[in-house]
Image 1 (cartoon, rainbow, N blue to C red):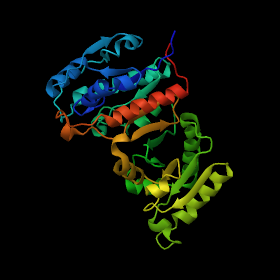
Image 2: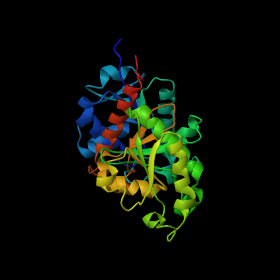
Image 3: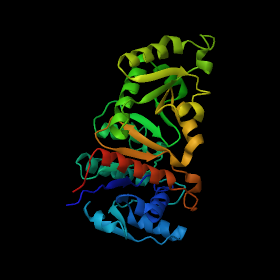
Image 4: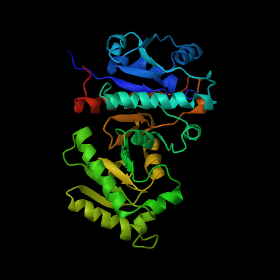
Length: 335
């Protein structure tokens, strides 16, 4: 039997742009990628098609393998029926359980090796926290499902790639969380997965500073001297090519960033602002440290443009393609 790649895509927030970008991805890119299955409500997809005047045939499937013969002519859907009708731009608490069920199903199929990779459509964290109080984004939710303690978020695009050592924390909490061991462990895991996922034999890693001008010899803070520089020295003793700390106001300049495979950042926005400014449409969020391949578009639910036909599917397409490229490299075939 021919070896194939199959990706599972979660429904995301139904009131956002997930249904639109999924439909557009199938319509515009299905000939460029391996099959994917949408885990969500087929009626919602049909209504989205009607609203946006898209003519896309949808087919409900009962098992994963059906998608292999379906994908060329139909968008395959694993049915997860919503509890309430969707009003674009207005998330409903009544649909929270089904949004989480979509994530749970896709992750479970991937863990059992019935799916090659997982791509998660964006969700509304504040809504999901009402059902699951500990929900702090896909990365940690999926990690908990798979009993992984320290997942890492790699944001990758053709122009720049970044890893924040702290993720969904307030800035004040992130500053308290930064320490030598966290920098070392994050860099070590990043180095490992750059080899596994992307075939980098000796990844070149830059480490960003925390303070203005990398502290400027302690004038603007001493975290570089006390925490970041000792961490880099320890990392280099592990035969990892890490350099820095580089001032955050210059390292993201393409002239410098292109010399490195990834930039380790000290907090969430230090990482996300550059990649979303430099290459918004092609950014992909990849979770490192999981026993499955999981990616997601590097954008949110975009409730303000939901249902208007304005959403770009490029980041979702990039996420699917990257997840399938990684799955192929890891030989996660579905037979």
